[in-house]
Image (cartoon, rainbow, N blue to C red; front, side):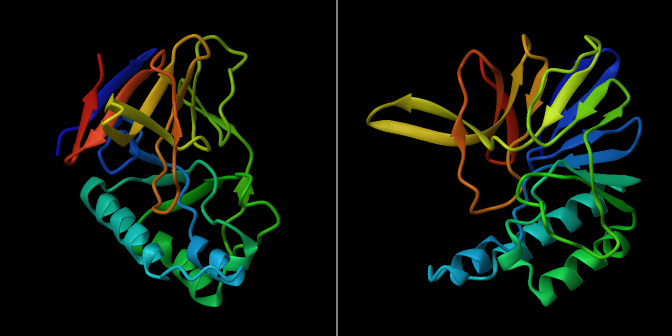
Length: 212
């Protein structure tokens, strides 16, 4: 595994190929946009998608927390996809996460989390952590010392030409706006192509690679 590194005002952010950010000094893992229950949400609309995607996403999260042993996992919004997909089975899996991970689970509320209730897990507002401002949708912090770490966008980078193109999930840093966009942690999420004006780190072959 090869990770990327970003330093901001004395805070070291490790950009993980598993699509999360690791803050080693405070032992906090940041992830965004799991969109759990998306397949069930589509099924409710008559679109037949397989229901095994959540298991893969949750297993990857458990493997990551087992390796890192964080004190907290903070989800930067859109833990679930919609109330339609929030089955009793999914509720039970989410409720079991803190014990399975061995650490606290916190949620910064996203647009897809609105109107949903999860036992023992309240969607909270954007917040400060060290020299970071954690939110779901990207914003420019009023304090110039802060870097906004956000989800919502599902950034991807396009490499190659018209006949041979790759779309890869990426971390994207906008220095002017002072925000770092996290790739979506969940599958079936799609992606938005971010401008090359962003500083980008693509995820490929279990590596995080900085683009020139």
